[in-house]
Image (tube, rainbow, N blue to C red; front, side):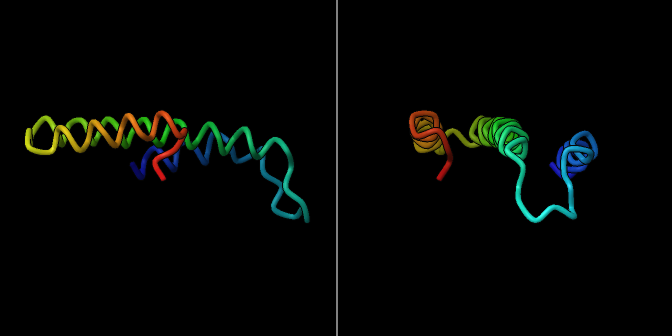
Length: 74
């Protein structure tokens, strides 16, 4: 996961202006991209964990369905 964050930051480093007083609209797209990729990685890890522990399968499936309906994991 740490490697993903580092690679994403390197890939998008030129988008951000650390001296600017306001956030650019472009930041929203970068954030959304990060959020989508991060959530996919979390879901894969969760699915792998569930595969090793079948007793977690039902609650994990409900969480995954709920997050997809609401658009987030929160």
